[in-house]
Image 1 (cartoon, rainbow, N blue to C red):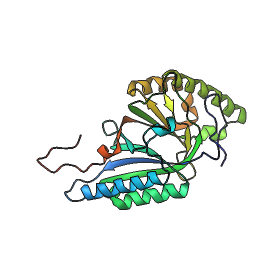
Image 2 (image 1 turned 30 degrees about the vertical axis):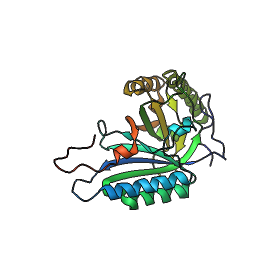
Image 3 (image 1 turned 90 degrees about the vertical axis):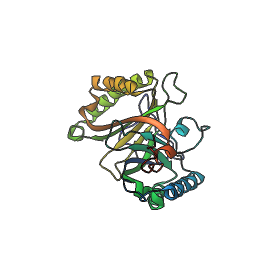
Image 4 (image 1 turned 180 degrees about the vertical axis):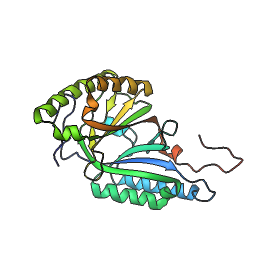
Length: 250
């Protein structure tokens, strides 16, 4: 499957032998009643996650930047800024495996705890590192976007000029020590066309970097959805709620 746009100074196409399926999840807790979701369901979910890792899944985007990093399930705590409570990005060996894996997680008990928006696509571009930012960061920024009517009506030269302008903004992101895990293509099954995943030092970095995109009119051809949160072990985020009198998981 060819890219909607070509290589740029910042991004290069992922090799066909390395292209993987991507799974984005946006989940909202719904286990308000006792017994809906308990430790047995949590254990079953963790069992499926262990199986997925054994089958070649990447369950921590840190491994995309550093293949030697522990491949342990990580999520993004988003409840303090968004209507959903957590998000995350996994990578599967194939589209079929990605779909089957989400079904297995749901059946194991995930659906009891969370109302989830699952988005599945393909990795398009290779990861890039920010300047001096080869280490792990504690925060993540997700950008979903789709081409708008103006993009569809634009001439080829206009689109090429736009790509060059956006590339300048992405170079600015790298100056902010942002690590970008390439680009994922989702329009094979969703109205969102692409996903970008960033490792960042904090929310202020995302705000400053996006201002650079605004300066080059990045959003004149796109509609976007932005998500920011703290990267945390997924096990902490999917733990059952404590019963009344025991307090709540933090």
